[in-house]
Image (cartoon, rainbow, N blue to C red; front, side):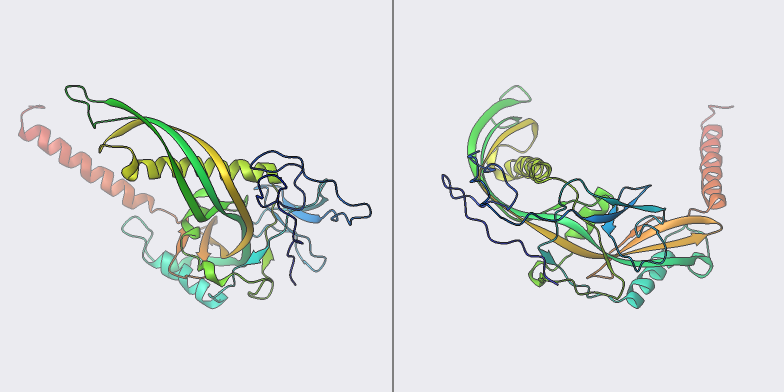
Amino acid sequence: MSTSVPAVAPCRRCASALEADDLRCPICGLTTPPKPHGAVEREQARVVRCENCGAVMEYSAEAKAPRCDFCGSVTRVETTADPVEQAQGWLPFTVDPGAARAALMGFLGKGGFFRPSGLAEEAAVESLSPVWWPAWSFRAGVDVSWTADSDAGANRSDWAPHAGRTRFDFDDIPVPASRGLKVKECEALAHHYIRGSVEDSPRGPEGAHVERFEATRSGARRSVLEAVERLSRERLQQGVIPGRRFRNVHVAVALSSLHTTRLALPAYVLAYRYKGKPYRVVVHGQDAGVVLGEAPVSGWRVAAVVAGVLVLVLGVLLATGVLG
């Protein structure tokens, strides 16, 4: 089913896009008009929260075991104090569960010298959970004032000061909003999604769960602003600031426009056990070649390498007479 948010009139002063629950315009700060008398309030949500990692999933009375799809820990049911944000668009799964399991086996089978031999054969897969994790996708116009030191015009010194103002436009930039996945996992997954495949309703394997958006809209915009500042620093060093070496790059950004969309992005979270110890792997929901996760290390192989290095160092020291 679709959970699209009803259209909201733009800001009366700057015409920037507004969301249904905005109290002020995110660009110019103008107070939004009061809701009309009798307007329907959004219902509070019942969610299932993991007691370990804090991930929040949609509550389902049909769930047979209160286990977190991300880490396998116990979950509890709670009712949120405020209405919970919902995804406005879903990217469909194009990798089926069989392909995700095969991707895990491939990941375990080619781990390099330090992986235990026979890991793929001895590892026991305990769970395979298809999930949609949340992210904001934003486009923004930004006026940037900056200062920096670079090697351009430094003459006899190593550094020279520079400053300036410029404008950047950002489009389709993802900002992770997941608590079940690590930030680095989200960033690695985000670059491989087919953005043009956004749909109005979820389409994926049976039993797929949706991780809920928890942050308030103001919190989400803080995350977007942090991303804008980081991306602005990167762009400044790609041709705006003169020179080849940079330090002390500082930016002050002012948003001239901002539009955010809440997306649900597909992935598989697989848990497996090797010699009694649990591990977790994440497989991309649209590209089975993207596999992130943990794997055991062979203790004796590490010890053998360390011993070999020590013997080599000892031999060098003896040959050079240092220990003679």
